[in-house]
Image (cartoon, rainbow over all chains, first blue to last red; front, side, top):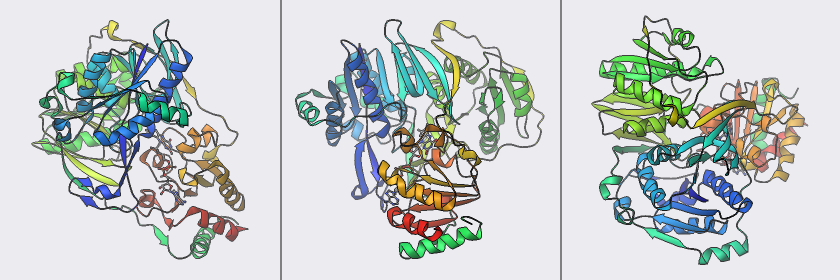
Length: 263
Length: 316
Ligand SMILES: Cc1cc2nc3c(=O)[nH]c(=O)nc-3n(C[C@H](O)[C@H](O)[C@H](O)COP(=O)(O)OP(=O)(O)OC[C@H]3O[C@@H](n4cnc5c(N)ncnc54)[C@H](O)[C@@H]3O)c2cc1C
């Protein structure tokens, strides 16, 4: 069985930052593996550890800087990885779910996986739609926001719980091959062991261009164009106390007492 | 031209977001001087259609297929209706179920999709506003296409009101059963604890800023001094530091205490969905740009490890 896990290096913005055109100035940005993808990777690695001949292949769309993040995924137990990038992608502008799904679908066509795992969303752009868009594109069945998975490989069915709003889970049976988008909390993602980190160095991390995948620059031209980026006006009118911790705590305490708290 | 909004329901109830979608649809339809169509798939569709017949709605399409949400059925049904109505914009909820079928419909119909939209306008083409980096930044997106699809963030628009004079029409879909490859087998409530956080008058709520499980002690101390109950944001529940039913938010509990003290919680939209109805919101966070301050009544921008013990002392 082959499991394809899509992973992404996401950007986190510092507490204080400046904008630079249609982006946050890079000085205020740090990059890391997307939180939701960590759980997807863990789900894949656990399936591999539980069964025979399971291969876990990680795929990312990202520039050379993303390699470090992908190595983390290899260190956590993925068998090999693919990184898709080229000039056309660098210039493509907004990589919306449809664009990403077109690229990932070409990888899926090459790899022919039985199961694709993605994170529910990425922490930076938060589209939350790449997994299901990909499923539709490659004709796989799918389930979004999966918080529990019981895979019956023999029957070719994934028994999943989908986490709905308000503390309710939906129990669904999904036919394989399928794309599942994985929610945080489904498991406990492992830290990479020293041994894992060493081994990751010798694992394959293949680089693919669009043309390697049979795609052209037109395939990543999105109809969505980002036209503006700004800091939202704070809708807030909070009373913010200033001073030492003792002083602010005292002011807050008296405000709360006025509301009858702690009496 | 029209705008088509697809309602959402669960276990016999039309969800509030359905009525919000009607407001969005009316707003867009005004921009294009078009009609508002609504649709509801599955369950007691006639009863739902009555509720969807609000002011400004022209037509409600009922599709009597199944009882509950099944994404394979929804994808087929909504795609077929969209082809028939041919709306300029197809509007769906950015809910968990919305995200389970909207991308499939958009993909099938080759319509560009913008998700989790917080503002919209239509002037020759659709312009959508969304948030990035956990609400720290907003971006506008122009959709260069004459047909688009969006999912709309819940609770951003008011629910449509009044009673309309919409035509209610049954729409017949042709469901390909072979393409229905998922089956919903039931529902389960999550539990795990012995405290009902929805009952508490004062909630001391703690987020990832607390860092380590051991550090929770300072939060319990504050709660004890205040006679309050401890709740948490999702990462702490995911880590197993607190039982699942202490989670506040979209997928956790919706709480409305007199006082909600958010400690080391950034105020992600899914968290805010569960606590914004609190009477008084207090935020303690060292990031002055954390979105939690947008909804707070009182704020302290400082290290929680300094502030929380000092606050406890005030009440001991
Ligand atoms: C489908 C879906 C459903 C979800 N449902 C929920 C839900 O029900 N409830 C929920 O909470 N989340 C939910 N989430 C997750 C949500 O998106 C956020 O990831 C989560 O709320 C973040 O929790 P947090 O604010 O504790 O952590 P973070 O966002 O990491 O914020 C931590 C905050 O602590 C501050 N901080 C750090 N150190 C200190 C210090 N020493 N002193 C003071 N402040 C400090 C930081 O500045 C930061 O603002 C859901 C996500 C999805 C996709």
